[in-house]
Image (cartoon, rainbow, N blue to C red):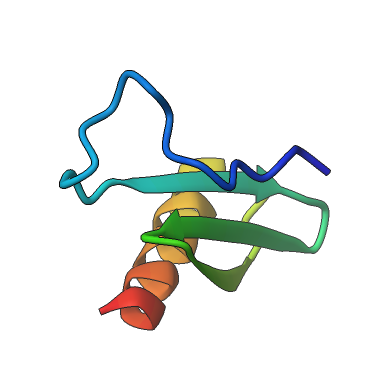
Length: 68
């Protein structure tokens, strides 16, 4: 697991709302994780081995429904 930053990065403006998104294409499921304003969000989509871009987009869409 990657380290979680507890303090804002010194090169970023504190008033900026940014979102970090990570996607992991797995054999069965594609996982998407987002960190936004100190909150964590996660979503999953069925992996489509014939077209990994499809499950990538589906996992990001599911993640956006969790965030917004």
